Image (cartoon, rainbow, N blue to C red; front, side, top):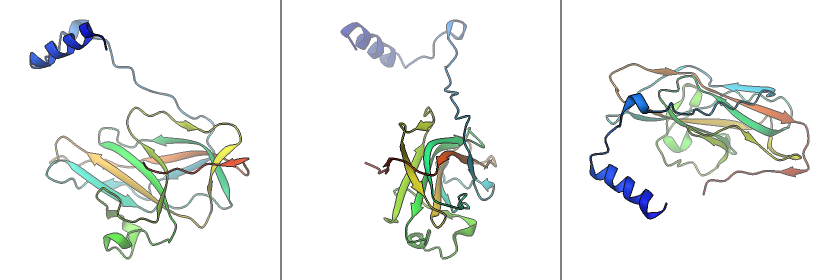
Length: 191
């Protein structure tokens, strides 16, 4: 920003950051890009009723059914939000030991489990994380992430709601574009 732009922001913040005149406001631009050619859907295994803490936040993990029956490579990733009012972010992991929830004291993860950040199970490799404003991921031609039928997938949902006294539910899902082979394999990591 130049000096004039910085001064404008400082003046606005110093003046209690007033909202401005609704009559002259422009509508927010929403990202609406979608992958139209996905071939694999992976919904949450059940509709989740939020149980937010006092601040309105909840981290909830679940183990969705692995949707592939043979080794595939993900070349595109998109999400379908069930309740966009409360989904803050969602992350998809592979649990290489196949014991999701064990680090949280859960022996049967079929009903999901509370999994506050940061992730404490260090055998989870991230496949994707989504947050508001992100568009679908499309890898360059010939590149993709391997997903095998034996992988245990873990979906971490972070929810936030302004009024925790209101009952909210969510049923979000991931959608993938896949292929049977790639020239170069892609790996994700959280930095």
